[in-house]
Image 1: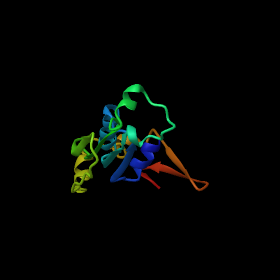
Image 2 (image 1 turned 30 degrees about the horizontal axis):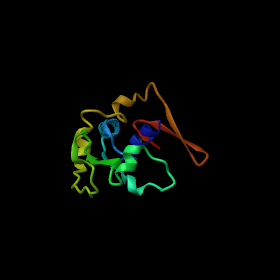
Image 3 (image 1 turned 180 degrees about the horizontal axis):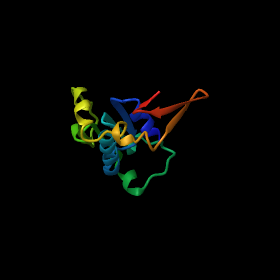
Image 4 (image 1 turned 90 degrees about the horizontal axis):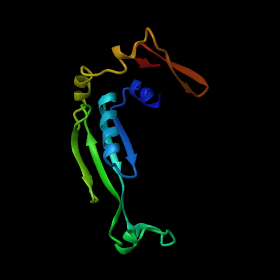
Length: 143
């Protein structure tokens, strides 16, 4: 339901922060971009064994290699069609940069529009509590 509320707000850019953007998180981030018709910045952390607190017990494999990665990144920028605009980048610290064509969002709505005609306002009502008042979904927008 939180996703639908954000889709109804016509979100253009969604930031998804994951410990590591492993394969399932890549799939989830790409799906969010496609479903929400927005760009997704999927940010994954890099963490080496040497970054762990000394009092934390690790596996023998990790203890043997201070440079071993515990978290391997996977950051990516994903377009509203679900395709990668940049990345994913694993196993290295980097900054991803891309020019985003916000007009592509309107073009992509033709393929899937979960807040438009698929929302079925004639069948479903959707409300969000905001400061003690309810905002109800009607005619493809969240008022």
